[in-house]
Length: 311
Image (cartoon, rainbow, N blue to C red):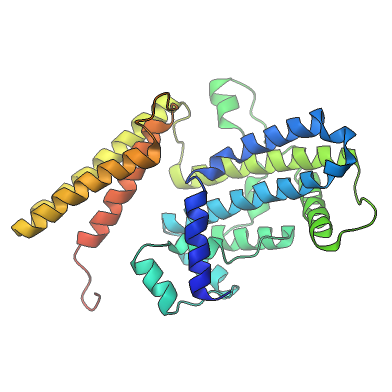
């Protein structure tokens, strides 16, 4: 696919997707499992759809996390260089213009150019990105909510790492056979589908815990605390931006531009978070703070002095 077409695809993909899709993967798997138990066991015509959909959920989940890790910065952005070497991604004029114009991020480009169609590819690429063995890193992760809020005993989310890897590997194999070969006989049993659901659920939960900790440490667990933390992060970004604005004399034209930007940032954050919609969820304030922080950080980058020799 030409680079321009790839960038167009990623832009449209982002428009169609929610920015926090990785947080909904567990819910999607749970809902799909309910559909499997209630209807599909008795309708063999639908059976093949379930392995395909489970893998789709996993691929969306992992691409979203790859993007998030790379865009977070050190050490993942440095490790991403190794991933880029294994892809067809070339930093030509089209890609450079997309990055400068912020049509896409480096995380977008990496996430949508790595191959994760087999368990070996998934494990290999995530290991390179993390700088440590991916599966080993999630093997001992526990559910913080269960332990800290529900006071459950500490135990790994993944009950048996060897079994999980075997089931996920088989899931990807079965999906590929169904999607690309159209076999005349079914290659799995209904108990296999139950195993696929169990393995996918454990994989998503353990990965979510591990990656969230890597980026945020011991992050708050209740929505109220998450909202408060997001508000604090926004305030810190606003203070940093204000410091940059005060550090140099700005022209009246710039002041008008900055005023327009501030209005845009506020309206954009409110629009993307849907915080003004009646009956918005409890996550809306966190989303609003997060989107506005993201815009402010981009503005800080625009206004910060460039090192000598850069434009």
